[in-house]
Image 1: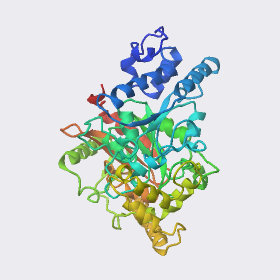
Image 2 (image 1 turned 180 degrees about the vertical axis):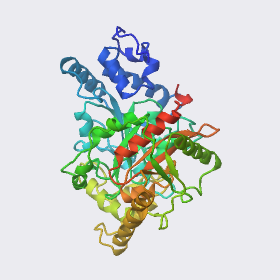
Image 3 (image 1 turned 60 degrees about the vertical axis):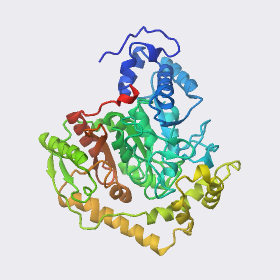
Image 4 (image 1 turned 180 degrees about the horizontal axis):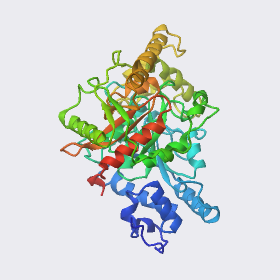
Length: 501
């Protein structure tokens, strides 16, 4: 790969204007590190490059509208990291790398954290989330916050993917205004696809990383719940919420995942993950990862709503994996009916959100779900374009998680999704992972708290992206990374969107 002139001029935006510009947009984390180690690029220039792309394509041009806020300290952080590199070397692969974070992830700096809501438009988090803290420790530059489906799509029954009252509508760079952008980490997915940063952080309760990954032709990892601390993330459900990486490649997503994992005393669920924590997922990047793998297809369960174009993409992916040496077990039938509904989320949301809001500054106008509902009604013209039916249902819950209906539904979800779901299928057929088209079936691993990786699978004749998802048992991220990397190397199907060239 041509890496440009190491003697390039050191002026403002030189990284964007020099002859490595064409390589930056699709460069991997390790390639960008090589540029910086060779003196062909600085972190400052990289930040300036992404800022210029955001100005050109996110605010203007295709108007992707994926970046909600830029960090006013980004250039200063980049300068400090450049100086540190010259004196003591890079801390690791994320040193000087700009990262975008979804707007429900706290940063204790000059950026807001609002979950896309005008009610929290002036809310500054009192401290970094665990995710932000680990990124800073690794030497990343927190470039900004991404737009998202408001309240992670847990406010209204019919909220459009990628819409928020604070940020407006995120658009899919592969077909702005034409293709669905996915949700709720839509801004993170669209921003990575558009090369507004090399990687971004999304969050998922049920499909919110996998959906925009599939829709924007990027890689999304939804980790095992507990692998990454939830501290400082605006919550929906303590049993299903997790942050996760979004990137243009499995390798970059694996690097980011390793930085984010670990035990956090502020989040009890991470203590159960000690045996599953790994800080170096790059070791599982095996180009022959599909050879001998046993993969099960959950058919016909997740195929009823799949149109012929997307079905063709998935069938081609299955044929390619079989040709590469994988054993495809098709169909795999589960003994229970599909897990569905959000009864558990309704109850867990009120308890979790009230706890989060109670810690915000007195200057923020809402500190309980009840106050948030009232605020939205007072500002209905802006705040309630799509209603707040889920908010109102959640407010009717006790907030104590003592309702018999909640407890029984939660236990039933665990049984259906784990013992009689994913665990059963993997053991019954001696499988390494389950396969599903796009984000169809995301509720199953979501309710189980189990990991999934969505990788680009191809494009419809109209040019709309569609992904393939690998799902495994608890803490099976190493296996899923091996499989997804093998699939990525086999198909090499991802292409950058034309709208932001």
